[in-house]
Length: 202
Ligand SMILES: C[S@@+](CC[C@H](N)C(=O)[O-])C[C@H]1O[C@@H](n2cnc3c(N)ncnc32)[C@H](O)[C@@H]1O
Image 1 (cartoon, rainbow, N blue to C red):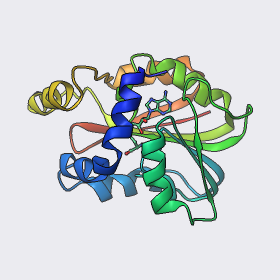
Image 2 (image 1 turned 90 degrees about the horizontal axis):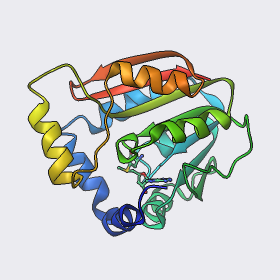
Image 3 (image 1 turned 30 degrees about the vertical axis):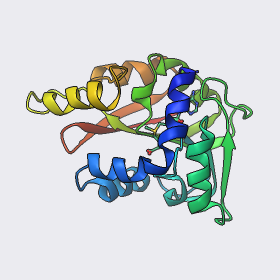
């Protein structure tokens, strides 16, 4: 699991998280979310992995969306926004040990969370386990882009926002990470220079 200090951190910042993220995304917040959720057609059951306060959760097109997060603070903000949505279920749990059976989900989403994990490969192994054959994967996060001009912004995020613990991948890194977990048809679409939408199929 991500260090307990980090879980406490998300509990502590949960009420400020949405405003801070909107600020850091510099006007791209809603457009990025739409691009991520629109990249997957309507499915029966979707998992919003590390759902936090619900940036994606209720926007995902699915008969049932399960949002999983380890932080009760983040989940309670999500619950405040989406608790009345009939198709949303929020679950406290650990991304390294998902409390779901094999082959259950038709889609797995994960936004702005992969950079928290020094070993995101283990999280992707779990994502693969709970995905049905052919399930859609959509991951959004800051990535290690080929552009030089975005390095100051990424350095700011790494040291000022994330306290030095910030794990990003380049396009090749994403490809091998997902292929090693057993996903196929991996593609990466850059969004606003510093971030990427990574898509794959189980
Ligand atoms: C930066 S937030 C992103 C939240 C949301 N997906 C978004 O796009 O705004 C990262 C989230 O990952 C969650 N997280 C970190 N480690 C986790 C773990 N081991 N299992 C489940 N969730 C975890 C944190 O609690 C936090 O809500």
